Image (cartoon, rainbow, N blue to C red):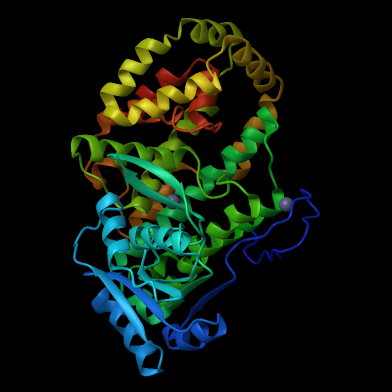
Length: 443
Ligand SMILES: [Zn+2]
Ligand SMILES: [Zn+2]
């Protein structure tokens, strides 16, 4: 695999004809990057900074950021969330707004997922320049112009604002616990599935696809896989590589104008487990780790698909006997109130419509060999992924992230209802084999 692929964003793509641009203006990934903050504040014409951290991130970098600014003569205000486990909910957003100093004209946050999601919202509401300084190479959502939050007890995605600057300070990133970079690598492994499913949907539904963006995403993913051995010892070069991969993969979603490069069905495993955690208080593992485990079981699902002989009559009979009302009940039992939006989506999308199914099935059968070739080209084996995870002492099965494998069949089946996205579970449903492949995952 070519790992030195160069991608030049900012122009019209010769491959897909789209403008590949990101709202992120610059990224930093170097030793002592935090010391550049005063210059950056001036560069963006700001005079007074609002620093955001939580009680965990304040002592490991937030305070250093605050002191670096004030020592350079830049006045700063701050909000440090007192929560050990901060949730991105109404209370946190309210707390941030009520502590916000409106005389500030630049927002600098130090953290990863939740802090970034909350700070992006504040930056969006105040229309200020926003810099995120990463506390760990933990997940790929730094660049995203959306915030994943919990509203009325349900996980939703709100429009917010991409950071103007994403900063990684190598010293700070490699001081973070190794399990955080393992989760970051897990979020990168998801890119095996995301690219594979993106190509499949392009093949079957003619969905927009750019081979240039896909190649770019593969190259940053492979660099992270190569760096994996150094994660355990928190080798600064390995951690910087994973961080770069996460930032670049996040930007790839901007370039493509959709989330396809970054995530597919494997991320829906994680969403579903998050939803169950919110509703029933069941165990939730770090995002990237759940994505890694979702990747592993997605690959197992694709391996099962490889062994299948497609059968048109069986697929048609399966779709005909599908009972949406009964399925909706099962979804509600599995997810609680989070299922409502998923059930409502079908009224808009009508993916289970029999005519639509027949049309997709015809394409799948006609293009079967191309479909199998995509799997061959894009996917490692499940044994490869298990070996990689074992080599860095990371969780390598669902039990290792504190969940029971009995939830795997329902998890795979429910991934098809989360968003209007053609993924493994929809392909299996179209072929009439979703139930049997899902059942196999729990064996
Ligand atoms: Zn393109
Ligand atoms: Zn992710």
